[in-house]
Image (cartoon, rainbow, N blue to C red; front, side):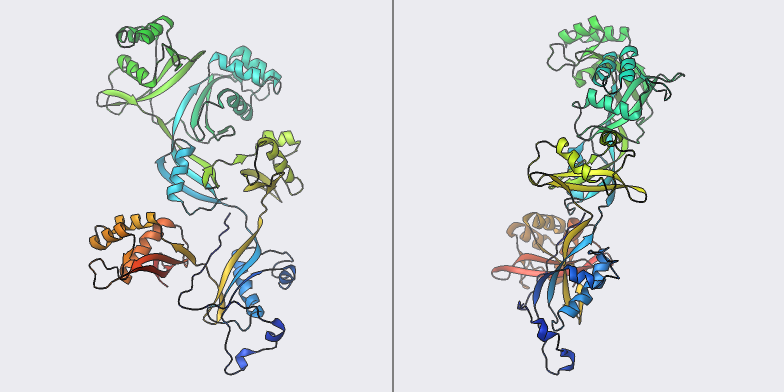
Length: 554
């Protein structure tokens, strides 16, 4: 969702605010009156119901514009009728209703982002112009961890879900697997499995972490195990359509002899952990235990028993652990320079994130389970029941404060089902989903005899901008770049060795704006305000417009 309000700085002219008497001006035809002077003025105006009614045909009787393009077609004509004697340099900021359905921005990177913190850092640097309310579908690489369910895990999940799915829960706890036969009363669906993983692992991983969960199944055939690639989004796990196999790895499972060999070889280095390993045949991974094996210690142990391999070979090593109960873990190792090193499997992930109060987060995604709880026949909202979304948020966020915003993703039916993205705002008592029709405003200016949409952004350079410019030009214009970095002002004295001429400042504008707003549309305008030195310090402004992909003087 984009709520952008643009401002224009007009230098060297005086703007006189006035409110003309329409009864007089409507009788004037200034074009036909020789010597009549147009008024130069600035005004803020908001469309009324009567104004929308003037364009009932174009707007299909609605009190909003279908698009910004439609607004830009109608509003100039409206302003020409409303302000017939306003002339060159006049400005009107118009408030109006706009249909502004939130749509996904699509981005991708080959960088490895392992959790939400790293996603936030990446988007903060590469999409800093995003407004709050922006949703991005980001494709990136992620480290993937592995977790294999142990016997006790099935019992834990069975106990947690016994009231929801009694037969399936009892079967899992009893047999140590999940029945995957759809026709069986003990059947575990994908959604049920995700509920189980939430109960078991919900507090074990950071937000955004991707995990490959391996579990035992019974399908009446020859399949005995299955694996889900799941991601924790802060509310629970979601299943990803991602290949968790990664690089082809040689599988190796430690044997009793391997544990004995490790225990013997490391008895002097880690006496307690080694003795415990030799006795029980598992690595104690409880960090509070005197027999604790860290990941680095386990890596050292695995290097003792794994065979010498060829440079670049990958091994997936499975071993027994004890973390309060027995379990199995897998460590992926790469053979490099004569030794095995930790080598996390990398998978390509596509996830939706949203910007909220300056930070990126995962939206709450309404699930089939939610819609079942609402008593819906189909897993989607419609115009008659969308209000339930806000009621649900009261339970999801019981300690919300006034002004809090919840980002949401849900399916919606209106002649067909589509996925919608939006945000709801808490007013202190209730949540209120922001409608697709928003109140917005945009500036229009009178230029060359007509009213035109004016998208000028007024921007004042910051200290970080000056540092960026100084670093970018230090090899091109050493003196001027060093000087501006030191003093924070552009030397505009033509006889100075540190002089910045107009062409150089235009180069600065291109470097700066390409960094600040790389996705700026063709025709976007900026007025850049910056400190200059001309014998004394002052402020100078330069107007630029994006033309054929570059910023040129406007």
